[in-house]
Image 1 (cartoon, one colour):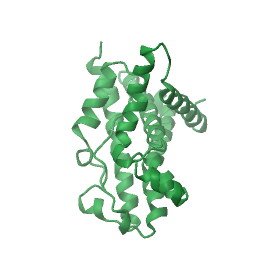
Image 2 (image 1 turned 45 degrees about the horizontal axis):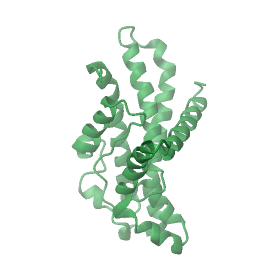
Image 3 (image 1 turned 180 degrees about the vertical axis):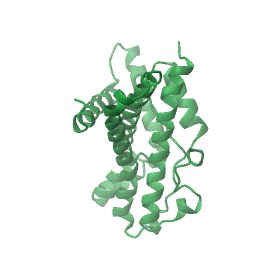
Length: 226
């Protein structure tokens, strides 16, 4: 647990920016597609204080960082969306959900392009800037991949609900109140249970890490860094 102030300084900024832009994107797209619920609450904003959740944005990522977790993630206050107010509720729900992960991928690409400017960074701050950029790439890719898991209320779950035929979409949508419990079970409890029997049941985390690795490599390739 040898986490220094330097470590925090190169993780906190990219994490707060990634989560803020993710939530602001949801609010912006919902507003453009007919639901002004989030806009009326001031959530169409890049002010992080409008989106930060004390536990999900600060405490949870810090706990995972101090515990040397192989998979770092966090969340902000969910953007309220009244899907019935959207112009085309089922399809527009897909666009609103995709806005967050898509924004994270764009941020990862922007950060990766920033790597090309490192030779011009002041010598005294080049390492700090470099670490922030690499962490920004990692965090944004992780947030995009994690949120696209097809489990409501994650964005991927809402995309699946919007695209699947109604007989499949309705049962999936009913899982939303239990989505976080399902995630905790898959990502934490199942691996712990497996370890008691000498089994590696950390399957979901392994898949997420693999997909994250591929997406990160694609980001670096597209920006001329690989």
